[in-house]
Length: 107
Image: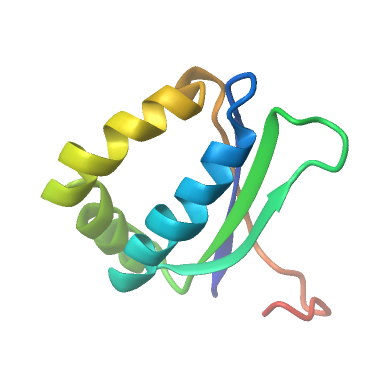
């Protein structure tokens, strides 16, 4: 059964606009080009330090393959990851795996 990954990040003070531009113009297109399915991208309505996004995976094997394709790529390691570290607090990343219920519309 497909599952989702809900990722919540703490954006460094005053960096939300820069983060959103980087996510929407660089990270999301890059990950999609590797096969990731990004199902949502959100900023918190009142807390300017909170960013949340969701990805969908059909199987654990697919998730492992896509993680490798993205995070072990030269592009990610040399060009993307260093910028990510300047914009978010990696120590505060929260990741939850979610499985849709039978009545969920996102199956």
